[in-house]
Length: 391
Ligand SMILES: Nc1ncnc2c1ncn2[C@@H]1O[C@H](COP(=O)(O)OP(=O)(O)OP(=O)(O)O)[C@@H](O)[C@H]1O
Ligand SMILES: [Mg+2]
Image (tube, rainbow, N blue to C red; front, side, top):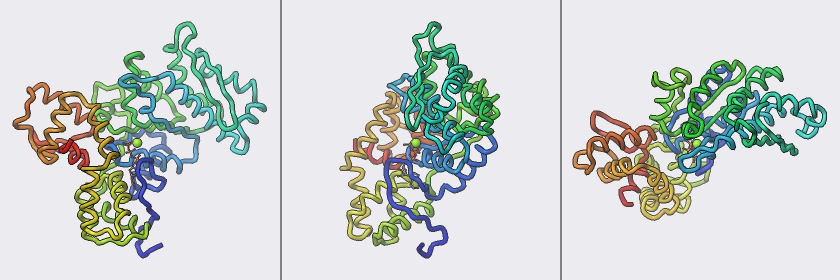
């Protein structure tokens, strides 16, 4: 297709993970290699960079049972619904293992054939917990019930054994467990102190499971696996998902516009690439918006990007929502940097020293800024910087 050597059909998509991530072959290959050797892996990258796309594509290429779930879905404000998380976790594991062991059969058939035996085994596996099952055509749903005497706390260690036990029971050498936005699990510590310790203490002995975690809170994740004080110290092999470099952004836009059948000027794409700075989600959003132009000229690009920053309700909502979740000091600093053009030192900011330190720590932890040199910080996402300046 086309005259390019590395041609991949590419159309603009915004929001959901993409099936064929552009230029992430090496990250995906690395993930598959690590999972195949059961090396715990952490996929690290800021918001909208393409982590989930890399994980899903990697999982697709691995021929063992695998489950994917995002901890973000179980976050309610600053508390974490661990019970629902573990219910889905168990359901996905059991369903995927069933489908793997008996690929040609529907779940009810398997249950009918193995019936009692199977349920007994599952009950035994996650024994202490009061569980109920809902078995339909395509899945086994597990409901963990915390009413049982002793509560659910004592059962969590057992539930965490589930993938390893399923592996042993069914003779499966490798089951891949991928938990996206893993950092949010720390909020479970409010009700279940020491959850990370418990996870590590179980995971490190699981010879039949590959654990993949991922998250946008770059600084925080790095601390989780590289600080001596943390339970996951030296546990994960990190794979970084980074911004596209200039060449990559340029070829991505070029190939996508060609695929869309849209004419473009090279200098217009160069301008867009500089403004959007290699954040794949924004490149796609820009691409979709500029399909309105007859031809993607410099004028079209300038107008489109201006519109993204000043008038676009979706972009504004994304920025506002993320901004509103930040603490007071972090907000002040981020806004200050935005007004400085996206990077600079913090001279003249109206915050005390300890507030500055607290705010900086939180912004670095959450992957909103980087430290460029001593005292100089930059907002990573150019759209956040530009929109915030106007907010
Ligand atoms: N490799 C890629 N090629 C093309 N587009 C991409 C690529 N990676 C990401 N995108 C764009 O970014 C969007 C978000 O991708 P994805 O959900 O994988 O990122 P993420 O890092 O997991 O984001 P979030 O921080 O919101 O979870 C996609 O809808 C798509 O527009
Ligand atoms: Mg994601």
